[in-house]
Amino acid sequence: MYFLKLVFKNIFRAKLRTALTMIGLVIAIVAFGLLQTVVDAWYAGSNGASASRMVTRNAISLVFSMPIYYRERIKTVDGVKAVSISNWFGGIYKEPQNFFAQFAVDHENFFDLYPEFLIPPEQLLAFKRDRQGAMVGRKLADQYGWKIGDTIPIRGTIYPGTWQFTVRGIYDGKDDTTVVRQFYFHYDYLNEEMKRKSPRRADQVGIFIVDASDASRTADISRGVDAEFKNSLAETLTETEKAFQLGFVAQSESIVVAIRIVSFVVIIIIMAVVANTMAMTARERLSEYATLKALGFSPAFVAALIFGEALMMCSIGVGIGILLTFPIAAGFANSPAGVAFAAFKVSQTTILLQLGCALVVGVVASLVPSVRSANVKIVDGLRHIG
Image 1 (cartoon, rainbow, N blue to C red):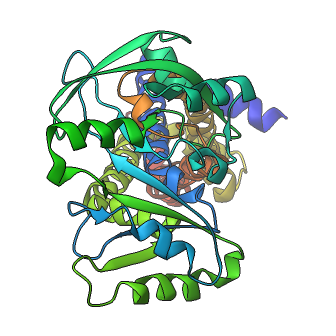
Image 2: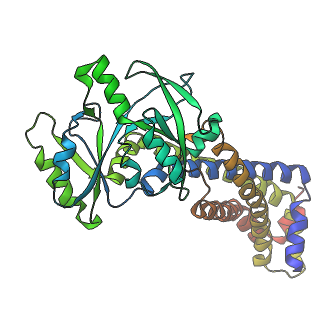
Image 3: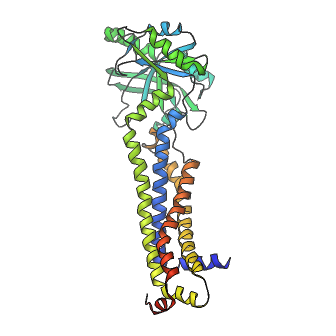
């Protein structure tokens, strides 16, 4: 107890220097935690993917569509339980910066394939009955202040014109990995308009959502579906939902890697700052450490003082940093940038990494000063003027 009290008092002997070092530690740990959380959020959607759901798309690219009659042929493949439709819309709500995902879906069975979407039965029924009905995620509704019955105008980019939708339902997620920032509406509404305005673009689908009767058979079912359309005008590629989503993540993998690298660079920088602080502290107190040795204290005790001071300083700074990470992450999650992620929550792994960084920074920063002070000769130390 006396040792810890002595270490604590030593930390605040140079109050300004200690305060500035701790502020740097807090900023570095918060930045590290947020960057790690961004990486976790990047993979949140794929981590929450269903093991039994698969996605069938055009084998060439998502840009190319498939005929809608493929749905009936996919249903005949052994092991397929249900098939639904999803088509990217890509419209603009008021301003271009108001970006969110919009999908035209099979209103009859799409949400049956997504039990993680929690929808009041009466809202789901109202959505199915309204040709222009829309189902929106909770985050999306909160961001724009939408409520049941509101009319939402969206200007089409891929499908020209201004499209009017009525909010008939707001869905929540069963957990933090569920995406609750998407906008769904009737595929029939889109298709009927295309038949009237641009018949050649009608009866075309972006992807089919395939629900397997047995999750262990997804590989066989994928091969069976793709074999069904072998050598056709629009060959298919069927993969698990997780693989499909990871494909999008892979396109931005370099960004994810860069974020990871930057997060650790931040820690290396603060390690250098703390090391400089400890070096200055040890140099100023060299005569004190020599006096301790002259009084009979061992070199190990002197080294322990410096190690303890560095670790306690890092622990206090990191502790404050971890506590601040949660409210800052929550604030970011509710900002326009944060709502783009399926889930933005500080994980236990991130907290453990922050604690690990505190330990590494404390040990590395105090290593050289502690060895130098422990090995200083008593005469040289007493002669030293800090």
